[in-house]
Length: 395
Figure 1 (cartoon, rainbow, N blue to C red):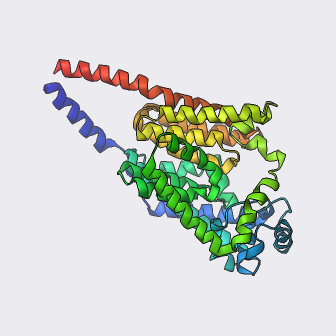
Figure 2 (figure 1 turned 180 degrees about the horizontal axis):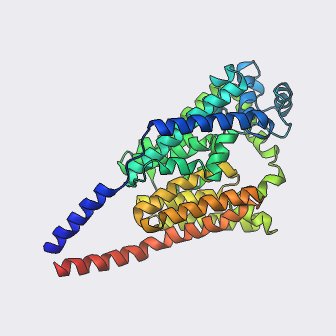
Figure 3 (figure 1 turned 180 degrees about the vertical axis):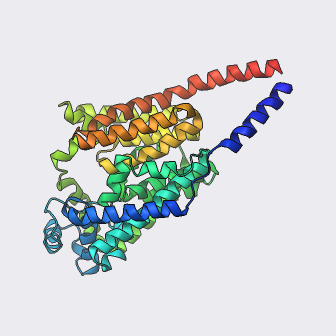
């Protein structure tokens, strides 16, 4: 009993020496103000290379009377010329993706981008705060500061992308499922269909696991978003959307920068459907079989969804934040290695961007992480069971 008392005292002392929680303070606000100025200046100088202008001109199509032609390529080209956008920067997201942009589109584009950057900062803070609370990991404000150095998150801010909305949807779904609110979690997860390719894999895994309440919530959420989209653009435009997505081909130059199976197979010259399809299906089935508990199962499913996604932008790699936290919580990533792992990840991704190394190579470590998280729990649980038996026998 003395040993147990000592262990409890040690754990209590450890809790008192842990860093503060993620919080807003004056230095953080000053830093974010500086970041906002830098991002806005860069975006003004290179706005034609970033994605926010795509969402901005698409929002104006809805506001300026061309909403029924949102997925007409000639109509998009006409608005591209008005807002000086390159002709290959098409709007391919579903209509409801424009809902947060519509109020901003009434402002000049630079002001709209600045406000969207502020919204994205709040969203990132909320994501990290939720993960901190749900996983019990506390590193002060370092996760927020370092996230801005993580190339996918940095790129998300510069482009004014939607990727953090997807990360937030996954994070909220996990938090709700952890509390047993399965239907509501599925409902929130439907928001991730703003980039539907990122969530398809997880939905298939949920189906294989027969997660009925989660899928019911997801279906209801999708129905609501479908109704909103129908209201925004009308039935003919909505029916034209699948054809538009399938025939407005992704530029081949983007494939080497997709850190998924398709991108990896492309850079090694093996991007064939007969190879890609069984590889993707095998990944989904393996992830479903590996789902034994929510923490590791959700992390595995997210990594699988990224690998099988048919379109994964560099900004979408921000999704890795969620499995990172879950791996810390479940012990897959020991806390002693967290700082080194985070630093190596940040340096590696930034170096790849600077040196123009194809980001598709990142599919290799993602695949390795997928296999490790899927396999390690069984080994770890066996070790924990043995250690617990030794501890009990010694009391």
